[in-house]
Amino acid sequence: MIFKDYYKILGLESNKVSLDEIKIAYREKAKKFHPDINVGNSEAEVIFKDINEAYRTLSDSNQRRKYDFKWNKYIGSRKKKENKQKKTFKEMFLDILFGGISRQKSENKAIPQYGEDIDTQINVSIKEAFFGVNKKIKLRTVDGKETSFSVKVPAGVQSNDRLRIVGQGKKGKNGGKNGDLLVRVNITDDKKFKLIGTDIYTELSIAVWEAALGAKKKIELFGEEINIVIPKCCNSGEKLTIKEKGYKDGKGKRGNLNIITKIVFPKELSKEQEKLYIKLKEI
Image 1: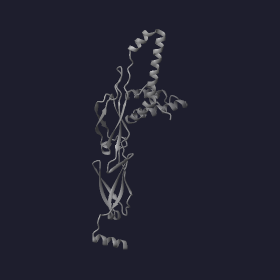
Image 2: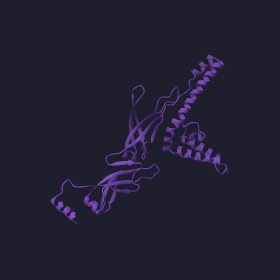
Image 3: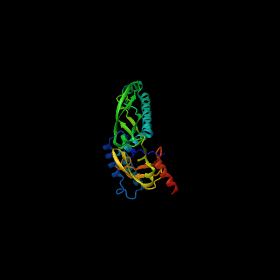
Image 4: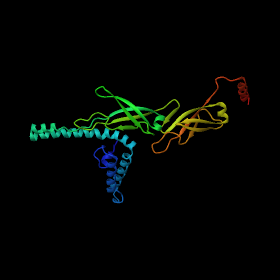
């Protein structure tokens, strides 16, 4: 798999940059490789597409969180190793050139190191994720102490999204910044509703006569009463879809609400009901 370094494409050295810095870098690069300036240059056209792709991802907070996780895995870890190797080579060079005195000075001037990020996860219900919620999580530090954090889960968060809490990871060394706390959100189904993508599924129990004759029913979802029309001759297991009443997609729209019908019989029949069913059978 070829992993694109969007930060490098925009001329940025790392992912420790603000949104304003990303915007400035994008404008400079886009201006340089714009098709109007590079007419007939196919290479510049490819670079311009990569620049736009990089900006779309990094300017969106949700997409950037997901991308940064992969960037740290493929690019960030490699850069740390390269910096470590450069440091070792520099020390060897100083030893050869100037002897132990220069090395001692170099060692006394310790290089700041970023602390490592910490990964954890939290469970939220579909309703909590829809409206947003503040969650408390407890983590145990390296020295065994228990620490509590308050995590703000935004409304419409997607399952497996990672929330970044800056500076709450492992401590940096030699004056370096602390790492971040990365919290993966796991949206859990409840007894009544199930989430698949942005669509919500639920079962609706209907009586035999409602299935035969049709009916109007109501269900409550996220504090809203939704009207359901049961068509005549409805079978058990049929799917009724209410458009745009599902979960949020992160772009201002919603998925669908899918109702699966389930025909239920009374536990006991009265004599009159039994006679009617016999009559139906004869008909």
